Image 1 (spheres, one colour):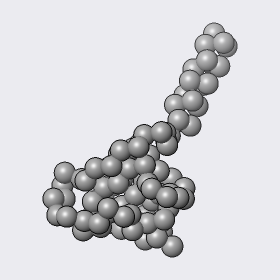
Image 2 (tube, rainbow, N blue to C red):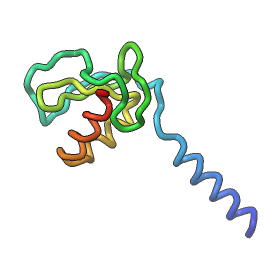
Image 3 (cartoon, rainbow, N blue to C red):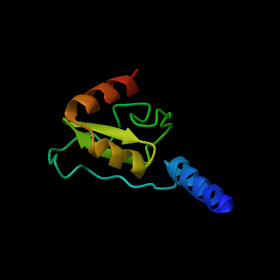
Image 4 (cartoon, rainbow, N blue to C red):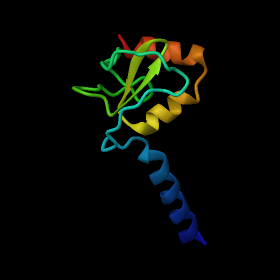
Length: 96
């Protein structure tokens, strides 16, 4: 019984820490935005994880006629679940 709890705790921790996978190198535009935007991200840090993007972001999406960069596709998926107010706040912090 104790070993089962430990195994479950380890599994849950592994899933929680998995977070970003920087090997995911895809770029796409959000289906909600169809306007042409710059391919260069307006932010230097991932608005979700806070990591520096360095050269090219792993994933980008269009948001209010801007290209927003992310460190991985998982962060872009989390971004999609945010409200516009939350996105505005996180993007502003990522651009500092």
